[in-house]
Image (cartoon, rainbow, N blue to C red):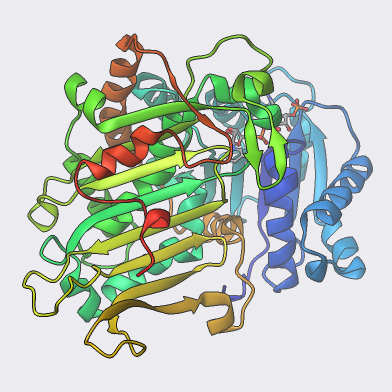
Length: 491
Ligand code: NDP
């Protein structure tokens, strides 16, 4: 990530400063950018949460988090202690306009010429109240921005309530809806791959591509987030935001320019072009399931209900769905989305599967090639293609692979996506953030699936932890003559 110097100091207010996201992601991301020389002296990072604590105590807690969550090679005692000096802490209920600590926050925010960012790292129920609090206490300046974490609502109505609520106090140009998948280098690299390489872009359509697979797999279960997750499930937690955003980036038409509005216009078109799901489509084209006890590697792990401490739940921890994009470029090309917890490997990848050779020249049909884009871990790409098998006397074929691991290719540390996104909010660059109409389009497409699932009385399918979901997930592709990438036969 280029260390573009940030010239002017800024004020960054993190509401939810004691939470998991701040400790695990935001503070380490700020620290890395500080080490890269991108946090100007005089910058103030103000932590806000209801817990009573002094700035000194907060800095100690932040230090523990940095030591726990930063990779060892990034830890430097002097840099950590210098970084901690940027931090302040105010105990404040941001949704309570009468809280006695507002004047302390106002006292730290005297300079109205500076960029001011309010990052809401709390549950969404706090967003509108906090935005109202900033307005009530005259903290919103022309250079202010507000960052909203996911989830933006649990359905269209609640999403629009948040958009309306926050929109009373901040214009759309100052609202940064974060989706950390868009901060990932490899997701951004899809834009470079397609739009900087005409050869690839010219093949990026239904005449060359037979289907697209987008997978986001986790090995972890729900852990301590079970009570939140049980109200959400994989469709709301992963598909409505991350996977649909990745799909939009993979499928979009070239934007006229790389501006936020042009790029987001093109993503929006893709979200609106998704084939709406009828109840019949949902039954045919979606699979949802819950993990039961199994093994991840050698380790036995409990099932979802045990993790949750409950006898029953109708929340999906895994799903596969098949959709299509109704545009000339993508006519007849299925897009399969798959995500789940307790799967065999942590991986996020996009597989662009090419069409097979249409005419039999060789004695055996050559395997159809594919491009595998690894979003995480080991960010990179593999181009799998057919080659002549040198070990055989006849002209037989085998698969060969061109692999690029971006970190070895570019000799660089791949930054966490929050490192990009935090600085984008300071620069006011909305390219990699989600616009309100995109949120609406996503929910419009997701809602019929949710309602069809609610009305579906069939028992929830299960899968053993450590497997790639229930058999029906593989069957959904098999029906179209395809297999998931990890099941491709070795030739
Ligand atoms: P946590 O429950 O760990 O933290 C919530 C934070 O908000 C705490 O610091 C809490 O502190 C504070 N808080 C709650 N209410 C108020 C209030 N009224 N005023 C001020 N502070 C308040 O949640 P996470 O950190 O896990 O998640 C935060 C948000 O980020 C959620 O929307 C989540 O969905 C999203 N997110 C989280 C990710 C993660 O990896 N954790 C990943 C992606 C998104 P206190 O109780 O002291 O007020």
